[in-house]
Image (cartoon, rainbow, N blue to C red):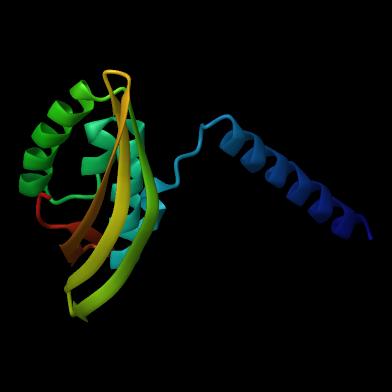
Length: 139
């Protein structure tokens, strides 16, 4: 009975710690979302809302990541806010360590007080390395 009570108390404390950390933004689960090509592409696209190139390019292989960082820094400097809506990512092909996903989403940004919307649809190439999926092209 005493062991059961200790386990329950320990579980409650752990849940409170994790829940509080998530609410305070101290835990970042972004690296855990690279187990599938769809999760990696979705996480990279949604990371654009943070307006930090490093948050997006952490899902890219080095060379395309550097090119993407340059593009994103220019975009983020011009925009006050960026929102991603209607995100849909579908696996098109997965063979060994290579994959392709079809992503479609609406990007909504404010620039100079004006709200702009653009629909994006793209095929994204990914590679698997050390149990993680990485985007292997700039878009």
